[in-house]
Length: 293
Image (cartoon, rainbow, N blue to C red; front, side, top):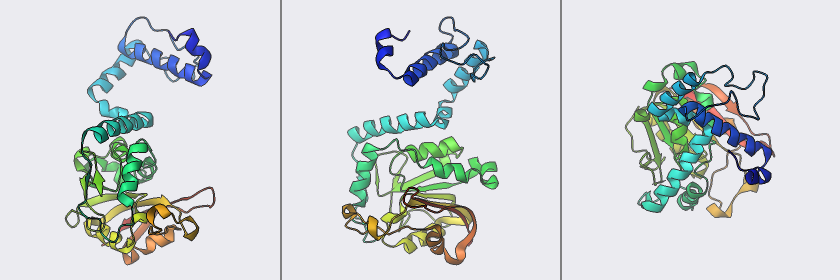
């Protein structure tokens, strides 16, 4: 039972969440008698677990127990796991990093993103990209057999999102200038450590602006992509007014989807999705395209 003293200091929404969690845990495990619903749940049939028996709840428990990666489909779980694993790994193992950062990479990129991995490993924005890509029918129908590359994931949250979307962990590769994770290999997006025509889907989320030579990045992406591969590029709008001394103003501006698509030239096939910024409040630039080789 939730203590009365705790109830007095917690917001009502948190009290309700605690009641739901306690009810859910008891219903799934069969630990003692379970009321039909938490006390604060609506009594009008709209509580999602109305009409579900305790034995059916225990079926859910069985499935989750034997396939815990199903929990990755819950954003809150992904965020907690990414944050907890980052805290553990960053405190117990050395951070691997490229031996020498090339001139194509903006100043301070590595150290800035290591700090970002420490502070915001739970930032779940990569899921925006997964949601769009998995709406493409040929991707959705073949998702477990596709080879996927994540360029510059920074933390593990992007890899958890890929698994949650249905991609096969054994066919997911991730590369970054640094790594604290067993999921992420060391490499530079200007010279990817993969063979020609290796991937069916490539994600570049919030990473292209760190390049001082975006055309070189795209040439590498085209090299490692198979014909008709799907490429996702997302980032934040930037221009001359948004240069940051943190990077010695060396990051490359991203303003529109057309700017990004132009980098692919004749290799740009159908565009499945585009999201141009609506400044000042909507700042994301994101496009999803098929590449033709």
